[in-house]
Length: 294
Image (cartoon, rainbow, N blue to C red; front, top):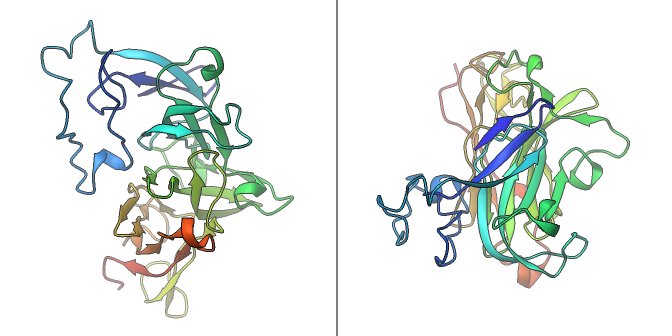
């Protein structure tokens, strides 16, 4: 959960709860939470839960443990992975942690220790921004999250950055996410594949999202309808299924030239054998519009 403070930062409160990220004292390690609502069906269920019961989920055993301050609103669901060894260049390189991953509307991604915020863990295990050249921004360019006022957005305010819940591939220790930025005055969307041990880009990423399809619908020109990241919002949680990352776009509050039908890029190829080849790339293979183009 999160709450805004007077400096427009956000306090991310870590909860001992049914998401299974945080457990009762003396319990076994938590189940990894690598996708929105725990599974591909988005049930939100942990059918293997053996510790939490109606009797022990009470005011004495269940509640906020501690919090971290982040730099923007947290709309995407935090994710969790146990026993991650921090990579080279991070503040606690070589140490092992249970980690909660948090993405913000300020285009930042954090890795926090999930068990406590004392001592070295009072600071992020790593923190990156999508607004620098290490994560796709052109050298020397000015980059910010997209101001909500650009789209007349009143729900996601004051800025739009990372909205859709990322997804983690435990087989390659990679977290995939889509970030929206304003670079030199132009709104862009990129798909990122980050190393969960360092936050560094992997597989030759990020990739700039761009597409067009034949059609004469709202916002078309010359018989072609072009994907416009300004007017589209990557709201869906990313899904990893059979080696493919799926994610979709809809309009911002049904405003702008692409208010009617939503975009859905599918699929996005993932290198499932990167540990063997170390040459894979992140690339879009197909875009599909899921409503009629009139």
